[in-house]
Image (spheres, rainbow, N blue to C red):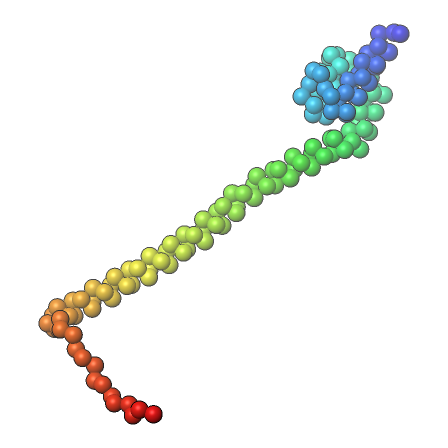
Amino acid sequence: MTIFTKTEQVLRDAMERLLSGRPQHADGKLTKNNLCREAGVSRVTMHRAAKILTEWDARTATSSAGGGLQHQHAAALVEFFRKPCRSREGSRALQEQVDATATVIVTLLSENRSLRSGQVSNGARAVVPMPRHDVPHA
């Protein structure tokens, strides 16, 4: 085996470990940087192996591990950005309820004050009986 063939084999082995989800020297993300880190070769050496990189591109494009992670990441980002929007909408609705309740309370307090001040100024603190209408019994 020549050195290039050994390097090619090391890169293939590293590619298999990454694609199968069993990395030994990298974090498991399907990136070219992790491929050279997993293989223990420099980026320059990795880029000299054009066949390996072509195979890497083809396999990561169709790999369920790579695509699945990208879709999970995208879905997580979408959810991350939607949460504050939902939170703001919920907060806005609650604030509207608080404002409406405060308006009702202020109105009731005002009516209560005017009723009490009217009773005090008229001196009408006694209970006034309501006229009774006799209803014939059936």
